[in-house]
Structure formats: C-alpha cells, structure tokens
Image (cartoon, rainbow, N blue to C red; front, side, top):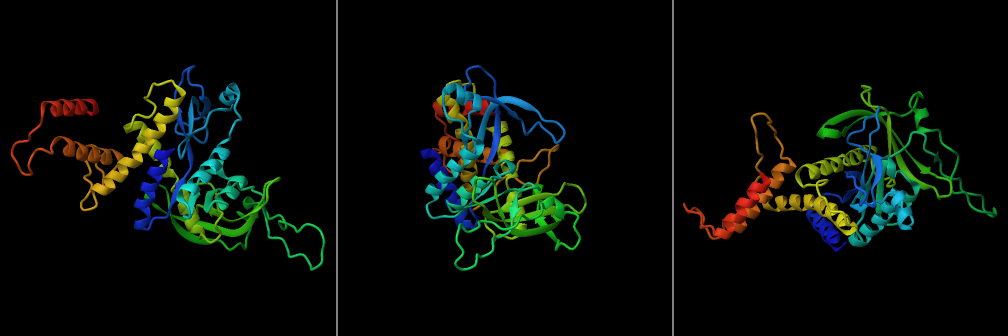
Length: 360
C-alpha cells in the first residue's frame, strides 16, 4: 500500500507540471493461471481472446487495475469472506486515491462494467468525475419541477422519464452535430453526436446528474455508442476522447506480459500472489518515469529493424533505454569519459554477463 502511494505521488508530480489532468483508468485484466493451490482463481471471460461473436473463458486471477486482486465468489465462499463485486472494489479504490490526492480532483474512466449509479455517487463524493459507457436503454429522467409553496410531502427527486437513447437514433429533427474526435490508434474520427444533460436513476439509489453523449459513425464502421460523464461541464467531444484513453490499459497489460514476466511467475502462496503481479505492473510505470527523466535533455532512441520499421518508441525501447542507463551508471563509473579502455572489476564483469545472458 505504501509503495502504491509513493508511485501515485511520482506520477502526479510528473504529470501536473506538464499540464496533464489526473486521469485514472480502471479496468480488469486476467492473469491466466491454473492450479489447485490458487485459492483466488476463477473462470472469467478472456477479453484478449474473445471476439464479438465468440466468448472465450479461461481460469486465472482477475485483477482490477489500479491493481486490486478480486477473488472469485467461489473462493470467498470457501474462505468465509463476504464477496466484493468489481464495482465495490472500485469504490474502495476511489476512496483510497481521493485520500492520497488530498484536495486534488481527478477523473476515473472505465468501460461498461463500471457504469453504475453507486460508483457515480462515490466518485462525486470524492472529488472524482466518472466517465464510462452508457447503455442505450439506460433509465434517464428529466429534472423535477419546483413544487408550489406550501405543498406538503417529500419533494420529487426526478422528473418525467426520457425516451431511451436508442429511440433517438432514427428520430428526425434532433440536433445532431458533426464532430471530429481523437480515436483509437491515435487517429482522428469523424462522428455524428447528440448530447444532453439528464438524471440517471437506478431503483433504490438517488438519481445522479450526468451529461450523456450518443455517437454514430457516419460510415457505419462501428455500432452506435453512448457515453457519459458525471461532470456536466465537459464537452461531448472531450467525454468521448477521455473514454478512448482507457484503451492504453489493455496495451499496458499486454506489454507487461511480454516484457516484464506477468503470467510466468510460479509462486503459490497467497501473499506472494497478491504482491508479485502489482509489483510487476508497477514496474511498467517506474520504467516510463525513469525514461522521462533521462530524456529531459535528449531523445529516446528508437530501435529499428529491417523487417519492422517504426516511427514511435515502444515499451521495449523504453525498457532497453532504462536498462542501459542503469548498467552504464553501475558498471562503467570507474571509466573516464572518452577513455579508450573500460575498467571493470571481475565481479562487475560476471554480473554484467549474467544479466545480458538472461535478457538476450
């Protein structure tokens, strides 16, 4: 917990002076592992291997990236613990981040699994804005009318029920607007959008104010989608662009599997499982922070290959750059700049050869 607090402070200290808002993306990732000793495992949908037409399920550990291990309901029942859903874990994480950031506002971004009135209320109560996907049949209401003076009884919390968003797709006369937004893959996408402010209600919960955005692809390449933000001051285009940012979490998890050894660890104890994966994914952020510091007065070298030309740096370039800087500082400190001979002790030489052999 203390390490997570320090890492968040380092990331905020790097982002805020550069003018970046504090946006925290929450998502789930599956650590594919089997074994009777894994008490927290369950059988979950594998988002990487699944498609719109086929759902692939696999045994493993479900992590909620901020990074919280979410035991399966079966594992909690076996341990005699009260089961926490993904949303309840996220509410707890939002409260913890709010305490760490003190008076700073931040944004929480999640996919449709986090489109929940309870989570929206928790974000609003902790200086956070929730941005997520909205169902096309969500229960949206207008604002209540002011009751006449002297009227007794409880004041209404919501007004009349609004039409479902999907019914507005083919209605003529709606104020649709053409817009261009930042899309997946760093591209710009032309869309038609319709937006409004309403109250979102779930039975048993107080309604919450939000701005909804209905987005249609004019080319028909993607299905109509709806998004929302609990901060009604955000523009519709900004809401869509903030939601698109969540795709970077999937890339981070995949890069962590490929370069940092996630899913290759073989420990079985509960404490080791709960510590290792968050530490490995936290290493992803540390490597990026170190590279950012190292290139303040220079450029990050991009490694090229004849069969794989690329213009932008990837995480493998970042990792190689940071690793090289650490080795140069550790092993070549006794060598003068510009000297023809590099002096290494036998111990340093052995350590360097072992590390090169292990990472080659």
